[in-house]
Image 1: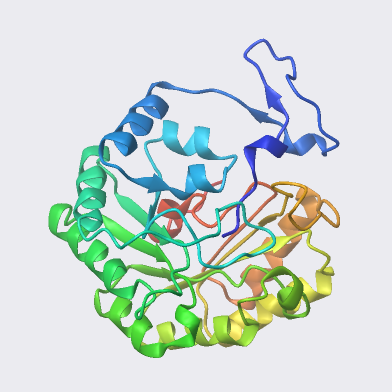
Image 2 (image 1 turned 135 degrees about the horizontal axis):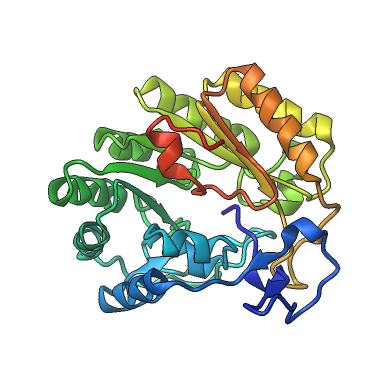
Length: 304
């Protein structure tokens, strides 16, 4: 998943003083402002026994999103069967599938009064369907309890099994998101259990099945600007509709190091180039993550 850990951000207290300094550019300073909705969502997730990728991947936007009563639900447990060298989600042997989870997610969406729900998962290569059935059931339960709510799913590659993708697409998510994550040259070292062409194939299949598609890319793992541009072109060749680009930061010293920090101006250039390539929406910036401003993307709004 494309996220930046809060431990790598320089927190700023309400007094304006930094409580921890890291060798990061000034634009990575994030103001810590826990509002009343943050605790409300924290308690709701605990009560409903739900996970969020916001917490598991230590996303820096958690304060902003939770204060706005938005969250990305993580289904199929919090243990991943893969070990990607950029991701802080725990790798190991997952627990059994919780068949009541889709209803609990739908109930939480209703309590939060969400207009747009985002659902993702860990990789579950241990399951025959990769978790596709639970994705479909979650979409269906959200729709049943919240007819006006749009649903976005951020899926794994299902090991390239088209039939698993079909199960998800038959539930008609409003957006099918599958993150490409990095450039093809870096896949063997950064995402060894994934395949670049397989990810493109998943997006291509989803588009031919009638879905609106989305993908995300990290910057700062050792790629060049031209290699990022090539990935953007590859995504457009499979008619990907929405693109997110954000800065990678190292979750722990065991993870891949940051090669360099891209400036806000460079991210703006990527946004302009992506728009010129034909993406319907490009969200590009240092703190951008897969679900950042997802509601605006879905409902056709653009932030100034």
